[in-house]
Image (cartoon, rainbow, N blue to C red; front, side, top):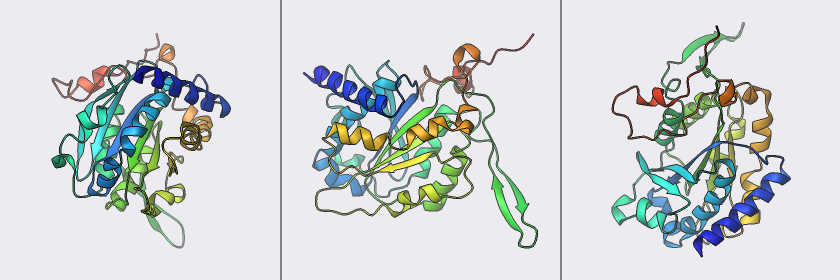
Length: 287
């Protein structure tokens, strides 16, 4: 029964992708879920539990192996067991909120953004940023973040569920600016319990964040998470423009042409500090 429902959701997501011109897009997908105290009424109302299968249905259109890496965050970041198409029923209760002790007090985005980007871009994420002085009359100091060192085979689509304002806006802004130099798009999904308003002021300002290479963050606040047609339309509102940008296309190259991929790598697999780098498909050398 659950598998039949997932097939229907994947078909609905496929129709939505066709409408926005993204049919056939391959991408690496990651799911991030908020477990801060603001999420307690949302989990209790089983909003996340109802939403996860729909997100998996969308993800299957980007990456048909049906295995999605996932993280939980609050004060810190916690790597979860993969969300799998053959074992997704009960995943939230089994892996995300197992007991009340899995809730964390604070809502901080930056730690999990760092973990996700380090997972997909281990060779680039921790490279140091530089500072330069700009302006003639009114000189200002600007941070110059490192660019992608080698093209990737697939963009990364991060579905980021949250129920409240983050408490580390400066650190999160810095992380988003750094990530804008890499082929990763963060789709923030703002959730709220019934009759409770969450302004999400910070997320609504991300489009105006300065010193970004490209706008790689979207925000959507679904009115009804149980309506897949409306949900997919909202989740795909900004992704098409991002994928089509020349700056993003320049960061992508097929695997046959030497694009790097982390499809077979998982956190925790590393027996040594170079394992993540070994997971990347090596660029071919010219004779």
